[in-house]
Image (cartoon, rainbow, N blue to C red):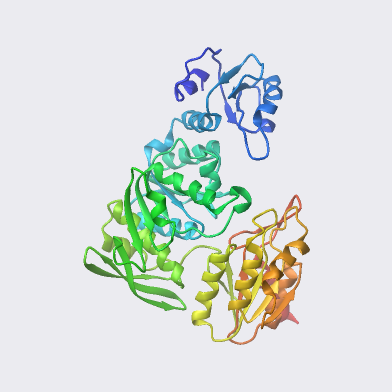
Length: 479
């Protein structure tokens, strides 16, 4: 694509030498002779430092101040320019779909999948961008992070449009919002699930974290808001979008869930809307599944799908890989894998299990390295409060010493009235839990969920907990 066409998207009026651009990047390692290299200031570095190297490779440089090269385009905000350039490079595919963004600490993935299910059962083809995977209709693509960078994102949008998608449902992370990855987008609806402690290593304070989430609601026409969360009303306060509220506690909400019945294989409740009541069922246990499914139903309803049809569409939904996922064992105990990696999500899944467990709850817990350290002792405290046996282990230690992470978790396990065991090797920790499992016990493998890898130092190794469970139990049978 000609540089002149890209520059039209930003309204750039300066001088430039027109040429063909075949790739856009903010990573100097990916630069080629026909690239547009955008210098972006980040938390750990400034792309302007690499601009001259990129220019020597033949790239056109986009920067916020002159770096002394001949082919440079100076703009006020390179983050926004990058988003605009990437959209224009793919002919702005996002403008040919309706976008729905979902943000919050927990529940984004499940809500996104449930919403996609509702739309597709009502005749709309959908794309999906999220933590577990990206999708264009039925086509599945590997997901590296919750919300991709602007170039990857528009590449995905282009695939969705080519496959006839009318909607794109996106999980929108706080980092993506603060880094401007979605700045060039407009959302039909934005959904707020909840806000609890997470990512303080990146945002610094809880208020900064909330502020990053709030940004999404300056970019949408309607905000679907969980007002049971203390930050719910804050999300749309002062914004121009229409606010539509849902709740399990407040009768003043536009949509309220009442008469909730929790079972081991799902949840039933009534939705009250405009003085009318409709019974809803979802095949996912736990109070959190009421919030997630209600958010999806409300959003679909606001997009024009009749409430009754939206509710009916979720009757057979079974949830998402790695979210309260029951692993087949052919044993008299149960193994559940859940992505619980925040205090709130860990408490939610443990309380859910507590509601139907007939035997012990054996929890295997680790915390990620190079991430929010403050939540580690809190998660340890929650685990000993709601478990009968706790095995503290590793998760994705990354560059941190696994033993130091374990020590942080154990700070919350002081004076525990249950057995707390530490096994650094996560495979051995899982095998230990399986070895002590008895009739009616429930073994919770918390933290990794859908992930099929483990990050040790700078290496990513294959690590699928489903395979580990299966391999161990098969070995036991053959003995």
